[in-house]
Length: 277
Length: 166
Image (cartoon, rainbow over all chains, first blue to last red; front, side, top):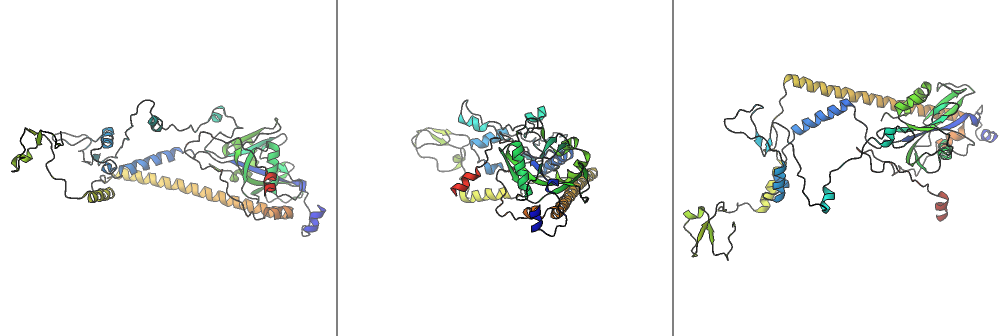
């Protein structure tokens, strides 16, 4: 402290280093695209139907040469429109067919599936694409310590403090030789093991939380007995958080879930830092 | 039997040839074939035909669907949907903007506060990170998760080793 005073003589009163802490806001970014809201779903569906209705006819003669086998296969796979016949009453309006397409409706194109012999190498290529489920095993058993839960959401690492309850991991500062971001990164590795790959966004602090006797106070409070927590933003890229101390409780939570874990004051003070997606 | 070969003793003929004067003079049985091509191939060269096909792909002729005619009720409905979407997007934009403003404000406040509490930490927080790069390991969200959702077997780089090699 004496040393620091000699370097920066302008500071009138030195605030003890013990009252400053470095807090880490560690995020796991979404792995899949966000879930659509019901409104978004119906709107996108409406737009797609409109677009398909107004789309030009598919020029099949360009892609399949006349008289070839592939053309025959393609034509056979199409459902084909209802054609206009003399003396027939059409309930849904007279058919208007050009280039094998009903002009009043959207064109539905069926891609013919190639038939292959059993055990053929083409089988592997022609197999239907089955996407992986967006809901994982961790979601089903509701394992909050897993990094594979809630794939469309950003998750944040929370740690249960024996005294203060659930909060972002926070680390004390021993000396001023290391920046706040380094303190946070090193503290995380001490707590959760070395096998974790993180990317620190910046060495600049994101926000400050001020506490007075373990109670959160307003950010513009400037009493002398405050404990300050400087928040550093970081992202986890690979590896996992495995606490050395097996008693330590931790959780990866989305913004909504985080609300139920932390106190109301704490959530209101950090809410704008958390992503809605 | 569509194509007559020179070696075959049977000659094929279409009805079109009957009227023509030049009846094949070769002796032997004559067989009539239905659908035999009598017209000469079109005068357009294959190259030109190809270009015509390619251009017709780009042209709207015969390919545009009927104009979409909406009734008054449908138009009102369509307008309502579009306006609702606009309002929804606007709300999202406002929320995003205000969040960003709050984040900037918080960052500003925190740095000002740090300046007053500890000058050294403040200076360290302001050091420009010159060679900082965006990590390649970051994943762009996809519609469906990959086969291996998370990579757990991360081994930290041994920094002491690399510095020795250098």
